[in-house]
Image (cartoon, rainbow, N blue to C red; front, side, top):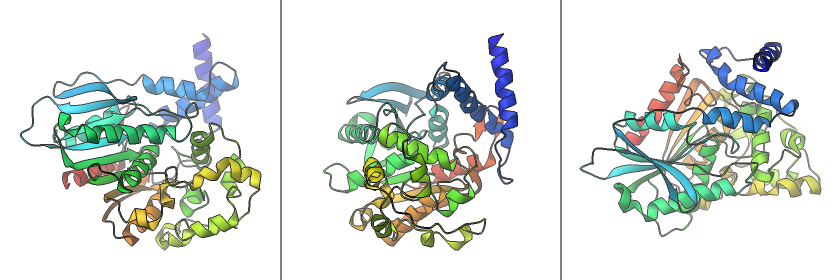
Length: 393
């Protein structure tokens, strides 16, 4: 009875607080199962049963897929980092591509299970021509920065040092990630490019990545501030959870009063609405007044200026060493401009970039391309673009 009552209360709550969805996002109702989990988790937290994070992680962890007769899937440990490897059961006559995949989830959510279907989809669309490894990195707020970054870096280094055991061509190693995983892939790629005796990465694949925490008032953050699945306030909340394990100074981060003006001006050459193409401002953009901050606030977030946390802030000397890159952005995504700005930085430094933009896409759409019986055409097109890029390597 309590369960039915709770479901009824949650349904009324969601109905009364309907999230506004923009007109170009297709098949809108299929997002509701995910939004429902977050809303129900918040209610459970408010009444003292469990935290929202714990509830959403529990729901996400229940998603399981059966055994696939064509795939060898095994959970391993790379150093102290859990990984899941996907390989064909039929031996390959030649060495395969090797993909290190880092899942999204705002550094707070996500797991091997939440991205199991996506990993299998990439695998089969490539006709088993790769070894794919998904990393279970430590999550915030329990594990603060740089825990997730270090796990992804250490797992990748271990893979590179033991490449002969996996039938992978050392000249075709790729790092890939979506959302927060895209951030981690970019950070790992920069670290490996900046002086390593390991094999050079062949490419990096960044799927709607979050790459900076200096400016949450870029055009895409203003235009899409209430578009699921990632609201503007949530984007700032998650990166604070990753940095400090709490959301202290959230308001200052959102309004831009968390970084001193002189430092922001120094980064304006890289993080600026002036570097966003004009066609991406037509849906609305109001220039934001630069605000200064107090020493106390800056002390709590000054590591936002570290490229391992915010890869968009890396120096040109490092950027120009990066491998061939693929960046996917979505029109209805607060993180759209992070991807656009990084694309410009890479191109300005002579790095070859393949860019794919989903005009009708939103944050998380690739993971939802075939979700609970619903289909997102934009998600399938985005997934196909990733696979086509991999095939070209």
